[in-house]
Image (tube, rainbow, N blue to C red; front, side, top):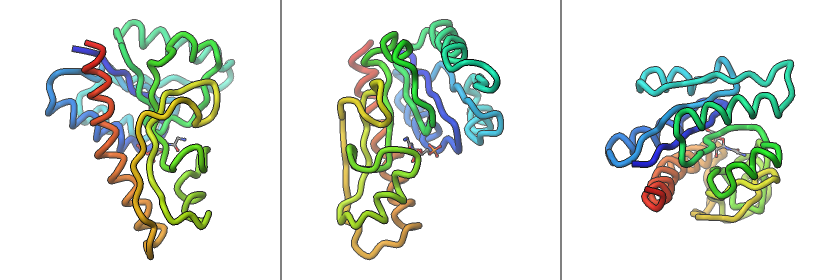
Length: 187
Ligand code: GAR
């Protein structure tokens, strides 16, 4: 059994999809969710799912200080792998080196196109005919790092809301699958 730590900043729908898949799969465990926003809905989801949740504030302290706290939690919880699920911060090189090849992120565009916080809107407004989702290892950049998996679909006549729904449905399908594969290769 491998232990997955998840970091999220927002709604946590990907966190929930991963939690439900791991619950069915039974082979691996989510050790904890770590949130950098006190009011993130992801915290409510974790409580409802009986998953241990930590709030780590970045307010009034250095990034390194907050990352040290995150690192301590992940080590104490025996995490073998970290999944970012809408965690909207960039780690310092020090943190990335500590967890090299052990941090995975999901992004709602076909990277390297449209990195950043508005991947769906930026893709939608770009004129691209093909839209999609990327799962990749985290390196020192923003939404960069070696790509593990991408899946795409045709934009066609879809509205922005329809595209958002399609992207999220795709994320909820592929992220748990890729993470389980990676967890299987660890233990
Ligand atoms: C997801 O669409 C994820 O791809 C995106 O944040 C959303 C989180 O949704 N991540 C990024 O944009 C990373 N740059 P969720 O909180 O419902 O899982």
